[in-house]
Image 1 (cartoon, rainbow, N blue to C red):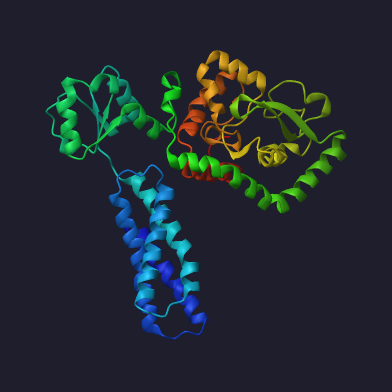
Image 2 (cartoon, rainbow, N blue to C red):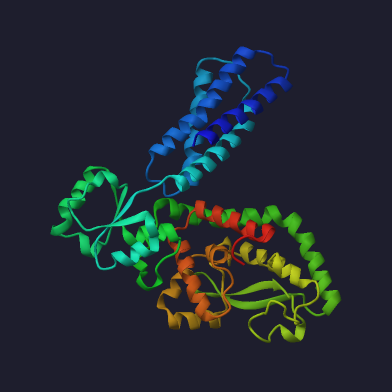
Length: 400
């Protein structure tokens, strides 16, 4: 965590000093004091965040804590009546927030955690999933100070036999976590077979964010319209010139609450072949010349901004599937219906983690990731999906 703190301190001081000098300020003593407080912000934020063991939303938490510390530093400077440049603080603040968030995420990824699995019938299977990072505990008198986290099975271990062991763990500050919850967090997907609607217990922050998403979606569509509209017009004109006929292709998809809606896409195949085979091969001759690139960078999905504006879709969520595919999957796996508890999206966790599903069987495999998204809905996860989507589109890195 030390390098990001140093980088944040140096970057902020450089930005602040640049603003001060550009404004003609030469009060170097006040500049030095302000830089001292700027260096304090990432250091104090890092100390506070590292001390917080439970951070379900590391990005949001890190940004919030850094902003609070930043405001505290400015308030102290104001109370001391030290002349400062609030413009300089305003420009430097995002640098501190971004670098601290990045540093905390890297710290959490790199920090080793000693995990013990309390012995029960599926302990060996869990150990194989987690690899060498976990050990199976068979002796209830084992030294607990060697473990940071203990994984338990609620059905097997909430009993008189293990009550003393669990009490010791709680008293020593060892994290006690249900094994399935930890595995979900590590693998970032749920176990579909054991998934139940009762596993969904949305926190107040998730409920608030789900309400805000509709507003964020609409604002984002309005913001990108000046760029998206000319591109969409050029694509529309190109398809009309090359193949004639309608440039927009519509299809009935299953959406929020299981309700059907009409999804819009640019038609990228010749008119006589749009309603042919359901799936498209990699080198499909039915694709209109030049439209393969549109599919590659997902520009054929630009018309779905209309669906987002109408409230039928979101920017991020489980990808909407054809009604017939959804019905087939629901017959195979009853849990499939739970993916309709949130708005479908242009991109989603399953898309960036698993990729394209060509069959109902593959769609069911993707379900583990879709249900993880439904369960872990948050701004942090949406931001991660957005970053991974951009990596896939621009750098061709990750799932297709």
